[in-house]
Length: 112
Image (tube, rainbow, N blue to C red; front, side, top):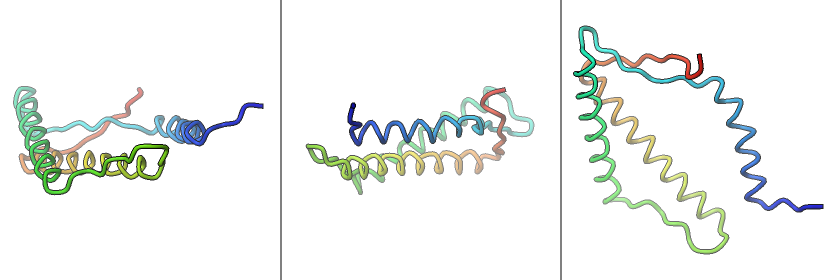
């Protein structure tokens, strides 16, 4: 009988959770009435750059926790969650920038 390690159990649980969720995924698109594809590309790049700079500024003030060496699953989890939170914050900054420029968020199914 093969014994499952905690990492393998977590990986299995993650797969079982994520696979069904993918069916409900959608892609966010940005629309600007009267806007061109070139304008969208420019604004998207400007907002992504601004969000990245703002996130870097936040990280300089409050660095992400680093997992300690060894099999400390909790500290690795904390570090991963902190990275996830920073990514979400960057996405919110990006979305706010696009909305401030007059864009509206729309979505379409990821898998047609």
